[in-house]
Image (cartoon, rainbow, N blue to C red; front, top):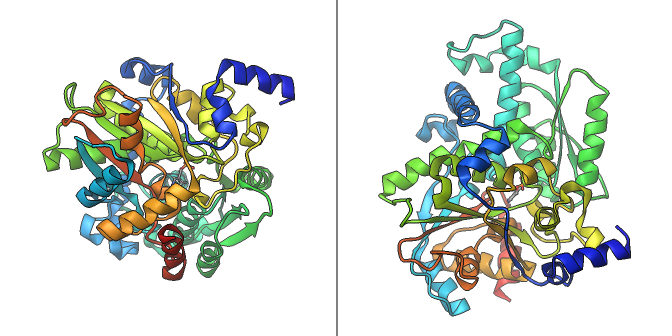
Length: 436
Ligand SMILES: *Cc1c(COP(=O)(O)O)cnc(C)c1O
Protein backbone atom coordinates (compact mmCIF):
# COMPACT_ATOMS: atom_id res chain seq x y z
CA UNK A 1 0.00 0.00 0.00
CA UNK A 2 1.48 3.37 -0.99
CA UNK A 3 1.07 6.70 0.74
CA UNK A 4 -1.78 7.91 -1.50
CA UNK A 5 -3.77 4.76 -1.02
CA UNK A 6 -3.30 5.02 2.73
CA UNK A 7 -4.44 8.67 2.70
CA UNK A 8 -7.57 7.58 0.82
CA UNK A 9 -8.38 5.01 3.47
CA UNK A 10 -7.87 7.61 6.19
CA UNK A 11 -10.38 9.89 4.45
CA UNK A 12 -12.92 7.09 4.11
CA UNK A 13 -12.43 5.74 7.63
CA UNK A 14 -11.22 8.43 10.05
CA UNK A 15 -11.05 5.79 12.83
CA UNK A 16 -7.99 4.35 11.03
CA UNK A 17 -6.02 7.40 12.14
CA UNK A 18 -6.51 6.38 15.74
CA UNK A 19 -5.66 2.77 14.88
CA UNK A 20 -2.40 3.92 13.31
CA UNK A 21 -1.43 5.96 16.34
CA UNK A 22 -1.92 2.89 18.56
CA UNK A 23 -4.88 4.33 20.41
CA UNK A 24 -7.64 2.10 21.73
CA UNK A 25 -10.60 2.17 19.33
CA UNK A 26 -14.18 0.90 19.26
CA UNK A 27 -15.54 0.04 15.85
CA UNK A 28 -19.20 -0.67 15.15
CA UNK A 29 -19.69 -2.90 12.11
CA UNK A 30 -22.03 -1.02 9.73
CA UNK A 31 -22.80 -4.25 7.82
CA UNK A 32 -24.03 -6.08 10.91
CA UNK A 33 -27.52 -7.22 9.97
CA UNK A 34 -30.19 -9.82 10.52
CA UNK A 35 -28.57 -12.98 11.86
CA UNK A 36 -30.67 -15.45 9.91
CA UNK A 37 -29.73 -13.68 6.67
CA UNK A 38 -26.06 -13.52 7.68
CA UNK A 39 -25.96 -17.21 8.51
CA UNK A 40 -27.59 -18.04 5.17
CA UNK A 41 -25.01 -15.92 3.33
CA UNK A 42 -22.15 -17.67 5.10
CA UNK A 43 -22.96 -20.96 3.41
CA UNK A 44 -22.34 -22.75 6.72
CA UNK A 45 -25.37 -24.43 8.26
CA UNK A 46 -26.61 -25.58 11.63
CA UNK A 47 -26.29 -29.13 10.25
CA UNK A 48 -22.55 -28.60 9.65
CA UNK A 49 -22.05 -27.59 13.28
CA UNK A 50 -24.24 -30.47 14.48
CA UNK A 51 -22.06 -32.87 12.46
CA UNK A 52 -18.98 -31.52 14.27
CA UNK A 53 -20.71 -31.84 17.61
CA UNK A 54 -21.69 -35.45 16.89
CA UNK A 55 -18.14 -36.28 15.82
CA UNK A 56 -16.82 -34.94 19.13
CA UNK A 57 -19.41 -37.07 20.93
CA UNK A 58 -18.20 -40.18 19.01
CA UNK A 59 -14.64 -39.44 20.10
CA UNK A 60 -15.54 -38.73 23.74
CA UNK A 61 -14.88 -42.32 24.97
CA UNK A 62 -11.44 -42.22 23.32
CA UNK A 63 -10.62 -38.79 24.75
CA UNK A 64 -11.68 -39.96 28.19
CA UNK A 65 -9.46 -43.03 27.86
CA UNK A 66 -6.27 -41.28 26.72
CA UNK A 67 -6.72 -38.01 28.64
CA UNK A 68 -8.02 -39.13 32.05
CA UNK A 69 -8.30 -35.48 33.15
CA UNK A 70 -11.42 -35.32 30.98
CA UNK A 71 -13.13 -38.18 32.84
CA UNK A 72 -15.18 -35.82 35.03
CA UNK A 73 -16.91 -34.60 31.85
CA UNK A 74 -16.98 -38.05 30.17
CA UNK A 75 -14.41 -37.08 27.59
CA UNK A 76 -16.06 -33.83 26.60
CA UNK A 77 -13.57 -30.97 26.24
CA UNK A 78 -15.44 -28.07 27.81
CA UNK A 79 -14.75 -25.17 30.19
CA UNK A 80 -16.62 -23.59 33.10
CA UNK A 81 -18.75 -20.45 32.86
CA UNK A 82 -18.06 -18.43 35.98
CA UNK A 83 -19.62 -15.37 37.60
CA UNK A 84 -16.91 -12.82 38.48
CA UNK A 85 -18.64 -10.29 40.77
CA UNK A 86 -15.42 -9.02 42.39
CA UNK A 87 -13.71 -8.40 39.07
CA UNK A 88 -16.88 -6.67 37.93
CA UNK A 89 -16.74 -4.32 40.89
CA UNK A 90 -13.03 -3.62 40.32
CA UNK A 91 -13.64 -2.95 36.63
CA UNK A 92 -16.49 -0.57 37.46
CA UNK A 93 -14.36 1.31 39.97
CA UNK A 94 -11.33 1.49 37.69
CA UNK A 95 -13.30 3.06 34.82
CA UNK A 96 -15.95 4.87 36.86
CA UNK A 97 -18.70 3.13 34.87
CA UNK A 98 -21.55 1.12 36.33
CA UNK A 99 -22.20 -2.31 34.78
CA UNK A 100 -25.88 -2.95 35.58
CA UNK A 101 -26.05 -6.39 33.93
CA UNK A 102 -24.37 -9.72 34.73
CA UNK A 103 -20.68 -10.35 34.06
CA UNK A 104 -19.51 -13.90 33.36
CA UNK A 105 -16.16 -15.36 32.40
CA UNK A 106 -16.00 -18.22 29.90
CA UNK A 107 -12.95 -20.01 31.18
CA UNK A 108 -11.29 -21.58 28.15
CA UNK A 109 -8.10 -21.12 30.15
CA UNK A 110 -9.33 -24.25 31.95
CA UNK A 111 -10.02 -26.33 28.84
CA UNK A 112 -8.45 -29.75 29.36
CA UNK A 113 -5.54 -31.09 27.27
CA UNK A 114 -4.08 -27.79 26.08
CA UNK A 115 -5.46 -24.99 28.25
CA UNK A 116 -6.66 -22.61 25.55
CA UNK A 117 -9.46 -21.97 23.08
CA UNK A 118 -7.36 -23.93 20.55
CA UNK A 119 -8.41 -27.12 22.32
CA UNK A 120 -11.75 -26.60 20.53
CA UNK A 121 -10.90 -26.16 16.85
CA UNK A 122 -7.40 -27.60 16.81
CA UNK A 123 -8.21 -30.89 18.48
CA UNK A 124 -11.42 -31.20 16.47
CA UNK A 125 -9.62 -30.98 13.13
CA UNK A 126 -7.02 -33.59 14.13
CA UNK A 127 -9.79 -35.96 15.27
CA UNK A 128 -11.72 -35.45 12.07
CA UNK A 129 -8.66 -36.20 9.97
CA UNK A 130 -7.94 -39.35 12.01
CA UNK A 131 -11.54 -40.50 11.59
CA UNK A 132 -11.44 -39.95 7.83
CA UNK A 133 -8.26 -42.01 7.48
CA UNK A 134 -9.55 -44.79 9.75
CA UNK A 135 -12.84 -45.04 7.87
CA UNK A 136 -11.09 -45.05 4.48
CA UNK A 137 -8.81 -47.81 5.68
CA UNK A 138 -11.74 -49.84 7.00
CA UNK A 139 -10.43 -49.74 10.57
CA UNK A 140 -13.62 -48.44 12.17
CA UNK A 141 -17.28 -47.70 11.52
CA UNK A 142 -19.19 -44.68 12.82
CA UNK A 143 -21.14 -46.76 15.36
CA UNK A 144 -18.22 -48.58 16.93
CA UNK A 145 -16.71 -47.50 20.24
CA UNK A 146 -13.98 -44.99 19.39
CA UNK A 147 -11.76 -46.24 22.23
CA UNK A 148 -10.46 -48.30 19.32
CA UNK A 149 -8.42 -45.25 18.29
CA UNK A 150 -6.05 -46.04 21.17
CA UNK A 151 -5.19 -49.50 19.82
CA UNK A 152 -1.70 -50.19 18.37
CA UNK A 153 -3.08 -50.98 14.89
CA UNK A 154 -4.50 -47.46 14.70
CA UNK A 155 -1.25 -45.91 15.88
CA UNK A 156 0.55 -47.87 13.15
CA UNK A 157 -1.82 -46.49 10.54
CA UNK A 158 -1.35 -42.89 11.65
CA UNK A 159 2.43 -43.27 11.93
CA UNK A 160 2.44 -43.36 8.11
CA UNK A 161 0.71 -39.97 8.01
CA UNK A 162 1.85 -36.46 8.80
CA UNK A 163 0.19 -33.38 10.20
CA UNK A 164 1.63 -29.87 9.97
CA UNK A 165 0.55 -26.49 11.29
CA UNK A 166 1.84 -22.91 11.57
CA UNK A 167 1.23 -21.17 14.87
CA UNK A 168 2.07 -18.41 17.35
CA UNK A 169 2.06 -21.12 20.04
CA UNK A 170 -1.29 -22.32 21.32
CA UNK A 171 -2.59 -23.87 18.11
CA UNK A 172 0.74 -25.69 17.87
CA UNK A 173 0.23 -27.01 21.40
CA UNK A 174 -3.26 -28.33 20.69
CA UNK A 175 -2.43 -29.88 17.32
CA UNK A 176 0.91 -31.20 18.54
CA UNK A 177 -0.42 -32.87 21.69
CA UNK A 178 -3.46 -34.42 19.99
CA UNK A 179 -1.60 -35.57 16.87
CA UNK A 180 1.26 -37.10 18.86
CA UNK A 181 -1.24 -38.97 21.05
CA UNK A 182 -2.87 -40.53 17.96
CA UNK A 183 0.54 -41.52 16.60
CA UNK A 184 0.84 -39.03 13.74
CA UNK A 185 4.15 -37.60 12.57
CA UNK A 186 3.55 -33.97 13.48
CA UNK A 187 5.45 -30.79 12.66
CA UNK A 188 4.68 -27.40 14.17
CA UNK A 189 6.01 -24.27 12.44
CA UNK A 190 6.39 -21.65 15.17
CA UNK A 191 6.55 -17.89 14.73
CA UNK A 192 9.07 -15.76 16.61
CA UNK A 193 6.36 -14.86 19.16
CA UNK A 194 6.03 -18.46 20.37
CA UNK A 195 7.20 -18.97 23.93
CA UNK A 196 10.19 -21.21 24.65
CA UNK A 197 8.22 -23.37 27.11
CA UNK A 198 5.66 -24.23 24.44
CA UNK A 199 8.39 -25.41 22.06
CA UNK A 200 10.05 -27.45 24.81
CA UNK A 201 6.82 -29.08 25.88
CA UNK A 202 6.05 -30.13 22.31
CA UNK A 203 9.53 -31.49 21.66
CA UNK A 204 9.22 -33.59 24.81
CA UNK A 205 6.08 -35.14 23.34
CA UNK A 206 7.92 -36.07 20.16
CA UNK A 207 6.65 -33.20 18.03
CA UNK A 208 9.00 -31.67 15.44
CA UNK A 209 9.18 -27.92 16.06
CA UNK A 210 10.58 -25.63 13.38
CA UNK A 211 11.28 -22.07 14.48
CA UNK A 212 11.13 -18.92 12.39
CA UNK A 213 12.62 -15.52 13.13
CA UNK A 214 9.61 -14.02 11.38
CA UNK A 215 5.98 -13.58 12.43
CA UNK A 216 2.90 -15.82 12.25
CA UNK A 217 2.09 -15.32 8.55
CA UNK A 218 5.57 -16.54 7.59
CA UNK A 219 5.29 -19.64 9.80
CA UNK A 220 1.96 -20.52 8.20
CA UNK A 221 3.24 -19.90 4.68
CA UNK A 222 6.32 -22.10 5.17
CA UNK A 223 4.26 -24.84 6.80
CA UNK A 224 1.78 -24.79 3.94
CA UNK A 225 4.55 -24.95 1.34
CA UNK A 226 6.30 -27.92 2.94
CA UNK A 227 3.04 -29.79 3.45
CA UNK A 228 1.84 -29.26 -0.12
CA UNK A 229 4.85 -31.14 -1.43
CA UNK A 230 3.83 -34.25 0.53
CA UNK A 231 0.57 -36.09 -0.28
CA UNK A 232 0.62 -37.91 3.07
CA UNK A 233 0.75 -34.63 4.98
CA UNK A 234 -2.40 -32.87 6.19
CA UNK A 235 -1.83 -29.14 6.69
CA UNK A 236 -4.04 -27.49 9.28
CA UNK A 237 -4.65 -24.12 7.74
CA UNK A 238 -5.40 -21.61 10.49
CA UNK A 239 -6.21 -18.96 7.89
CA UNK A 240 -8.71 -20.97 5.82
CA UNK A 241 -9.91 -24.09 7.58
CA UNK A 242 -13.63 -24.82 7.70
CA UNK A 243 -13.01 -27.74 10.07
CA UNK A 244 -11.23 -25.54 12.61
CA UNK A 245 -14.11 -23.08 12.35
CA UNK A 246 -16.71 -25.81 12.94
CA UNK A 247 -14.79 -27.17 15.92
CA UNK A 248 -14.90 -23.73 17.53
CA UNK A 249 -18.56 -23.27 16.61
CA UNK A 250 -19.64 -26.22 18.78
CA UNK A 251 -19.01 -23.85 21.71
CA UNK A 252 -22.34 -22.19 20.87
CA UNK A 253 -24.56 -25.09 21.94
CA UNK A 254 -22.34 -25.80 24.94
CA UNK A 255 -22.60 -22.21 26.18
CA UNK A 256 -26.35 -22.16 25.57
CA UNK A 257 -26.70 -25.24 27.81
CA UNK A 258 -24.58 -23.63 30.54
CA UNK A 259 -26.60 -20.41 30.48
CA UNK A 260 -29.82 -22.39 30.66
CA UNK A 261 -28.55 -24.36 33.62
CA UNK A 262 -27.71 -21.09 35.39
CA UNK A 263 -31.21 -19.81 34.69
CA UNK A 264 -29.85 -16.98 32.55
CA UNK A 265 -32.30 -15.91 29.88
CA UNK A 266 -31.29 -14.65 26.45
CA UNK A 267 -34.06 -13.04 24.40
CA UNK A 268 -35.17 -9.72 22.96
CA UNK A 269 -35.31 -8.09 26.41
CA UNK A 270 -32.26 -9.97 27.75
CA UNK A 271 -29.40 -9.37 25.31
CA UNK A 272 -26.15 -11.30 25.43
CA UNK A 273 -22.84 -9.51 24.79
CA UNK A 274 -19.77 -11.65 24.10
CA UNK A 275 -16.19 -10.35 23.91
CA UNK A 276 -13.73 -12.57 22.05
CA UNK A 277 -9.96 -12.05 21.74
CA UNK A 278 -9.03 -12.19 18.06
CA UNK A 279 -5.80 -13.21 16.34
CA UNK A 280 -6.26 -14.53 12.82
CA UNK A 281 -9.99 -14.85 13.54
CA UNK A 282 -10.79 -18.58 13.42
CA UNK A 283 -11.37 -19.08 17.15
CA UNK A 284 -13.50 -16.02 17.80
CA UNK A 285 -15.19 -16.33 14.40
CA UNK A 286 -16.19 -19.93 14.92
CA UNK A 287 -17.43 -19.31 18.46
CA UNK A 288 -19.39 -16.23 17.34
CA UNK A 289 -20.95 -18.22 14.52
CA UNK A 290 -22.01 -20.97 16.94
CA UNK A 291 -23.52 -18.34 19.23
CA UNK A 292 -25.43 -16.76 16.34
CA UNK A 293 -26.94 -20.18 15.55
CA UNK A 294 -28.16 -20.39 19.15
CA UNK A 295 -29.27 -16.84 19.89
CA UNK A 296 -29.64 -15.05 16.55
CA UNK A 297 -30.17 -11.30 16.86
CA UNK A 298 -30.13 -11.47 20.66
CA UNK A 299 -26.38 -12.08 20.87
CA UNK A 300 -23.90 -9.31 20.08
CA UNK A 301 -20.37 -10.54 19.37
CA UNK A 302 -17.34 -8.26 19.56
CA UNK A 303 -13.73 -9.12 18.67
CA UNK A 304 -10.92 -7.70 20.83
CA UNK A 305 -7.39 -7.08 19.54
CA UNK A 306 -4.11 -5.54 20.75
CA UNK A 307 -3.49 -1.96 19.60
CA UNK A 308 -0.32 -3.14 17.82
CA UNK A 309 -2.01 -6.08 16.02
CA UNK A 310 -5.52 -4.92 15.04
CA UNK A 311 -5.58 -6.93 11.81
CA UNK A 312 -9.26 -7.90 11.88
CA UNK A 313 -10.57 -4.40 12.57
CA UNK A 314 -8.48 -3.03 9.69
CA UNK A 315 -9.41 -5.90 7.37
CA UNK A 316 -13.14 -5.73 8.06
CA UNK A 317 -13.43 -1.95 8.16
CA UNK A 318 -11.74 -1.51 4.80
CA UNK A 319 -13.10 -4.73 3.33
CA UNK A 320 -9.52 -5.53 2.28
CA UNK A 321 -9.31 -8.58 4.58
CA UNK A 322 -6.04 -10.46 4.05
CA UNK A 323 -4.78 -8.12 1.34
CA UNK A 324 -3.90 -5.59 4.04
CA UNK A 325 -1.55 -5.98 7.00
CA UNK A 326 -1.04 -3.95 10.16
CA UNK A 327 2.40 -3.00 8.79
CA UNK A 328 0.62 -1.15 5.96
CA UNK A 329 -0.65 1.19 8.67
CA UNK A 330 2.72 1.51 10.35
CA UNK A 331 2.05 -0.90 13.20
CA UNK A 332 4.66 -3.29 14.60
CA UNK A 333 2.56 -6.40 15.36
CA UNK A 334 4.60 -6.63 18.58
CA UNK A 335 2.46 -7.55 21.55
CA UNK A 336 2.84 -9.52 24.77
CA UNK A 337 -0.48 -11.12 23.84
CA UNK A 338 1.33 -13.81 21.81
CA UNK A 339 -1.92 -15.57 20.84
CA UNK A 340 -3.07 -12.39 19.11
CA UNK A 341 0.19 -11.40 17.40
CA UNK A 342 -1.19 -11.68 13.88
CA UNK A 343 -0.61 -8.99 11.25
CA UNK A 344 -2.97 -10.21 8.54
CA UNK A 345 -6.48 -11.53 9.24
CA UNK A 346 -8.20 -14.57 7.77
CA UNK A 347 -10.27 -13.44 4.78
CA UNK A 348 -12.30 -16.63 5.12
CA UNK A 349 -13.40 -15.59 8.61
CA UNK A 350 -13.72 -11.88 7.82
CA UNK A 351 -16.19 -12.67 5.03
CA UNK A 352 -18.21 -15.14 7.12
CA UNK A 353 -18.48 -12.51 9.85
CA UNK A 354 -19.32 -9.62 7.52
CA UNK A 355 -22.93 -9.25 8.61
CA UNK A 356 -22.79 -11.21 11.89
CA UNK A 357 -20.21 -9.27 13.89
CA UNK A 358 -21.36 -6.36 16.07
CA UNK A 359 -17.92 -4.75 16.11
CA UNK A 360 -14.30 -4.77 17.23
CA UNK A 361 -12.30 -2.92 19.84
CA UNK A 362 -8.62 -2.70 20.70
CA UNK A 363 -6.69 -2.70 23.95
CA UNK A 364 -3.10 -1.79 24.87
CA UNK A 365 -0.67 -4.34 26.29
CA UNK A 366 -0.46 -2.20 29.42
CA UNK A 367 -4.20 -2.49 30.03
CA UNK A 368 -4.10 -6.25 29.41
CA UNK A 369 -1.41 -6.64 32.07
CA UNK A 370 -3.29 -4.44 34.54
CA UNK A 371 -6.41 -6.56 34.04
CA UNK A 372 -4.37 -9.78 34.33
CA UNK A 373 -3.25 -8.70 37.79
CA UNK A 374 -6.70 -7.38 38.68
CA UNK A 375 -8.48 -10.67 37.99
CA UNK A 376 -5.76 -12.63 39.81
CA UNK A 377 -6.21 -10.36 42.85
CA UNK A 378 -10.01 -10.26 42.85
CA UNK A 379 -10.98 -13.76 41.67
CA UNK A 380 -7.75 -15.79 41.97
CA UNK A 381 -8.01 -16.61 38.25
CA UNK A 382 -4.75 -16.80 36.32
CA UNK A 383 -4.97 -15.87 32.65
CA UNK A 384 -2.39 -15.29 29.93
CA UNK A 385 -2.22 -11.76 28.43
CA UNK A 386 -4.20 -12.66 25.26
CA UNK A 387 -7.08 -13.88 27.40
CA UNK A 388 -7.59 -10.39 28.86
CA UNK A 389 -8.20 -8.65 25.55
CA UNK A 390 -11.98 -8.85 25.91
CA UNK A 391 -12.10 -7.81 29.56
CA UNK A 392 -12.88 -4.15 28.87
CA UNK A 393 -15.80 -5.23 26.66
CA UNK A 394 -18.62 -4.24 29.03
CA UNK A 395 -16.97 -0.87 29.66
CA UNK A 396 -16.50 -0.33 25.93
CA UNK A 397 -20.05 -1.24 24.91
CA UNK A 398 -21.61 0.82 27.71
CA UNK A 399 -19.34 3.80 27.03
CA UNK A 400 -20.11 3.70 23.32
CA UNK A 401 -23.83 3.25 23.95
CA UNK A 402 -24.25 -0.10 22.25
CA UNK A 403 -28.02 -0.69 22.43
CA UNK A 404 -29.05 -2.30 25.74
CA UNK A 405 -25.44 -2.82 26.92
CA UNK A 406 -26.31 -0.80 30.03
CA UNK A 407 -29.51 -2.74 30.71
CA UNK A 408 -29.77 -4.61 33.99
CA UNK A 409 -31.13 -7.50 31.91
CA UNK A 410 -27.96 -7.73 29.84
CA UNK A 411 -25.45 -10.56 30.25
CA UNK A 412 -21.83 -9.82 29.36
CA UNK A 413 -19.48 -12.73 28.73
CA UNK A 414 -15.74 -12.19 28.54
CA UNK A 415 -14.13 -15.12 26.71
CA UNK A 416 -10.94 -15.93 28.62
CA UNK A 417 -9.03 -17.82 25.95
CA UNK A 418 -6.02 -19.28 27.73
CA UNK A 419 -3.71 -19.54 30.71
CA UNK A 420 -3.65 -22.82 32.61
CA UNK A 421 -0.63 -24.20 30.74
CA UNK A 422 1.58 -21.16 31.46
CA UNK A 423 4.44 -22.15 33.81
CA UNK A 424 4.28 -20.62 37.28
CA UNK A 425 7.48 -18.55 36.91
CA UNK A 426 6.21 -17.07 33.65
CA UNK A 427 2.85 -16.27 35.27
CA UNK A 428 4.58 -14.56 38.21
CA UNK A 429 6.36 -12.30 35.71
CA UNK A 430 3.08 -11.36 34.01
CA UNK A 431 1.50 -10.68 37.37
CA UNK A 432 4.44 -8.49 38.39
CA UNK A 433 4.20 -6.36 35.25
CA UNK A 434 0.52 -5.64 35.94
CA UNK A 435 1.22 -4.92 39.61
CA UNK A 436 3.62 -2.13 38.65
C1 LIG B 1 -5.26 -18.20 19.24
C2 LIG B 1 -5.72 -17.47 20.41
C3 LIG B 1 -6.71 -16.50 20.31
C4 LIG B 1 -7.35 -16.05 19.02
O1 LIG B 1 -7.73 -17.05 18.13
P1 LIG B 1 -7.57 -16.82 16.56
O2 LIG B 1 -8.17 -18.02 15.95
O3 LIG B 1 -6.10 -16.71 16.28
O4 LIG B 1 -8.25 -15.55 16.23
C5 LIG B 1 -7.08 -15.86 21.46
N1 LIG B 1 -6.53 -16.15 22.65
C6 LIG B 1 -5.58 -17.10 22.78
C7 LIG B 1 -5.02 -17.38 24.14
C8 LIG B 1 -5.15 -17.79 21.66
O5 LIG B 1 -4.21 -18.72 21.79
